[in-house]
Length: 228
Image (cartoon, rainbow, N blue to C red; front, side):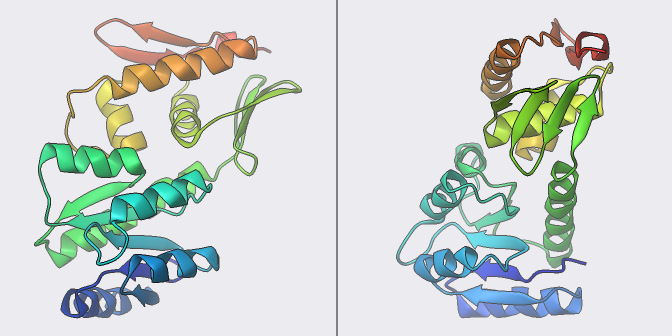
């Protein structure tokens, strides 16, 4: 059960009513915002455990709202809803920071499952992790090798956390797409490669060259290269 309320940002009162009633049936408290401005104000109060965000709103678009939240450091899991369901539409939502993207009309059971999944992923992100002398500080969103530390952006942090949880095991591109970006499909972009390249550069600045690319297989974080 999600302890904090789920913020439902939806300007259609019928759809919002259905979602809020379902949340109550699933044991989740909820808040409802009709507009983007209401959503921004409610999120700032810090009492929200997850967000269901409609992409098309009467004042501020869901993509812009989500971009503002992520730029301000908000890591609350967000499930974006939209009637716009092309691959490009989903990629735009996920690139803006959505943890998942569900097209309308949707099945209530799928909504429940996807909401639970993004919340589970968010809980795992909250763990402080360590492999050798390399460790992640979740509260500070920093990576440390011994006493030396670097800041990481949201995706770099999530990628490194996933690699560290699977240290010395091959992590495929598909695994990263699903578990870091929430993609249930291949967007046919170099999003993994470009972000991993930047992450590798950040780690090398720490003196850590532990992330290897295995051509045709995926990536692996070598614990032996994380310091004793």
